[in-house]
Image 1 (cartoon, helix red, strand yellow):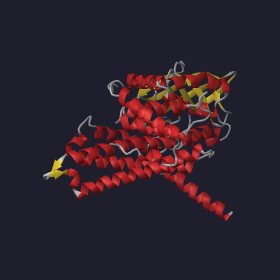
Image 2 (image 1 turned 30 degrees about the horizontal axis):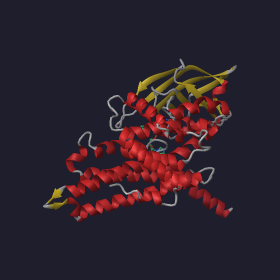
Image 3 (image 1 turned 135 degrees about the vertical axis):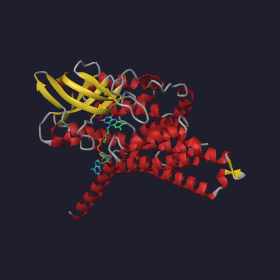
Image 4 (image 1 turned 45 degrees about the horizontal axis):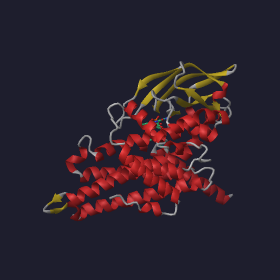
Length: 388
Ligand SMILES: Cc1cc2nc3c(=O)[nH]c(=O)nc-3n(C[C@H](O)[C@H](O)[C@H](O)COP(=O)(O)OP(=O)(O)OC[C@H]3O[C@@H](n4cnc5c(N)ncnc54)[C@H](O)[C@@H]3O)c2cc1C
């Protein structure tokens, strides 16, 4: 049913095709019995299963891989999203949460945490956003004050995925070396730290573990600092640079599922005495959906490929991939709901679930408007260089 022709595109190597096939088969076998009524328990089970099956090895470098392979991350997210949004979420957060450690941590930090996040024995979270600092990351207020051999964190984080179930939080805090973005640092905070409280659990349209966190006199050893004081903004942006492309990949997986459901529906449903798929306006929708999907796929795989080929930063490519793929998936899924008629808005129908799942992807890890700002800045800086 699903067109897998994209796996022959030149972005991929045989190992990527093998991964996509193995994961697809695994997902078909291992995700059907996940109970969504308790998202915390569901996510714990998913992390455990993905860890046992070895797929979490892709989320952080270990003995088997020296660096993150963004094409593998993208294909994994795309495939899991096509099967089950929560499975994609569980996989993605292990990568994003552990990302600052795997990309910028020292040997002791990597040895302490990465074997656990890769095995599914520790759940990871990435704590950047605050009530007054979402898109405006440089405005972070949560403070980290040096006190002898420790840092003491005070303040609040919100919209933190895996908040409430994580064993490991990477927390970005103001250490004040310089104003704004240059005065931030990144810290490892264990979920069991008595100074870290779950202030509020947040409910959203596509449920997953999410919380507002309160840090009150939260002491961490100085060895919990990732990189150097003042490098927090660089660490956050460098981590997002790798993982932002994979948000586009998840959107692509949702869109592929929506098209597959819709094509099947159009072929099977009789309307006005013939299969619905014979109506040319329906064909027009199907064509637009397929076009949006291929264009999104090209941008996502391009961004992943450029990073894997050794580019230091891929801000422009990753922004394009995330922006286009998430917006395109919203269009594709909206068309899928429309073409399913009443069934499209029926609670629990796959396209209704996709309709709820896709929305937040246009907001988190940089809203669509913010991606446009990143792309425009890149265009303008190219102009400056060409004049210089
Ligand atoms: C489901 C979900 C999961 C999340 N998980 C995490 C997580 O694990 N860790 C974490 O740290 N954060 C997480 N977030 C937070 C997320 O990254 C922020 O919500 C996002 O960055 C937007 O910040 P904000 O909500 O404060 O909105 P604001 O910053 O107030 O922005 C609101 C809107 O203003 C517009 N806007 C913003 N900036 C600009 C601009 N420069 N130009 C034009 N328009 C602009 C955009 O449309 C944007 O959506 C999550 C959010 C959601 C919804």
